[in-house]
Image (cartoon, rainbow over all chains, first blue to last red):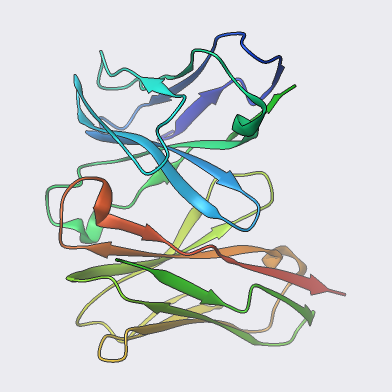
Length: 117
Length: 114
């Protein structure tokens, strides 16, 4: 089954304790992205990756890191989490963002609800 | 600056009734517009995709319209069901590459009551 998976789905942690949220897709997609969703603000892009070893900042990258060593995986790293990073996080992938976009639907993972105390 | 505005922010309707959600955008140059349905606590799922030349696109009881001249889109839900309770997100793509290619609306939260 074609899908985007994220782990963990729920996480409660404390300020300053490094954590990683994993994201994996099995559709051979080139483009992957991380979003956070906060009430009233909609989805905001954190980082994106156009392909292996190619990553770039989105609209709200501060406090986050990413890596893209393999095409299927795109982990989100919080080196020193803070309470303002409490949010619902989504990973998404699409075939490509460069080729004609009509069929480049983004497929979203199930989300990771993170609470930083 | 590319923007997508959705209205209303929230809506409550009775089961079986119809409703229409609005999306206005200022994204340029326009490539396509998508409507997503997002159940609470889950990832968005695509309902329809429309390009510049498409005025209407249906997916079951969901019908999206697009007026590229006025830069407006609507999502009409017919004979609503309890399972339609969700947030509906309008996403507009620009003919661009990279992160600025997608602009998300903040969504309309629909609640269907029995």
